[in-house]
Image 1 (cartoon, helix red, strand yellow):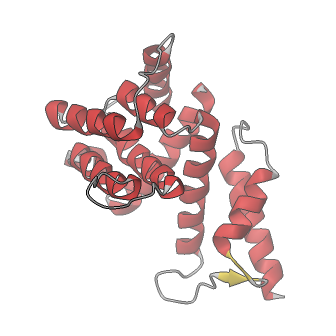
Image 2 (cartoon, helix red, strand yellow; image 1 turned 90 degrees about the vertical axis):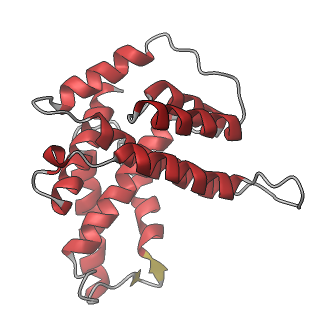
Amino acid sequence: MKQALINMLEMQHRMNTRVHESWIDQNFEWYRAVWIECGELMDHYGYKWWKQQNPDIEQVRLEIVDIWHFGMSAMFRQQQSSDEIAAAIVVELQGYEPAIIDVREATERLAAASLNTKGFSVTAFWDLLTAAEMSFESLYRSYVGKNVLNFFRQDNGYKDGSYRKLWLGREDNEHLVELAAELDAEAADYADRLYQALDQRYQESAD
């Protein structure tokens, strides 16, 4: 788990650095993004008892991955390495028994913790992960996949419109899922291998 956390933290740092080179110094309100994403998650899950609603669990899980982006960002502090943050998360979760609550209550608890502390609660997030029946491995695969695909798109002309989202008759996210399943998600260079696999297939599609 620790190595996977380090991988994600370092990827998040690289992504945030694209927005602002000294992003940690800016003290962005990551907690605000967390509770707003919680509201969006609730829309996908459904809370309106006065009308028929069916939870869209896949969208809920995508929102959880988005929340994790902001949550990790909120945990960075000056002079603190990804290794130190990952170690602290592991210690906090050691022996932790997630609360047996539903997605709505878990989401509300995470939002409340973010608002009350202006930070991010790892245990409240873990409760939400459990409530949505999402494993740490699936969180890791989903997070790394989304991060790698975002970088890949940017590196291949997404901003100027030259990027091709369809390759060999399928969308890039379909290729992503397929290629990710073929790789060892626990490898330290998992993200790099996934990027290389995407690049190879993208180049093949252009031949």
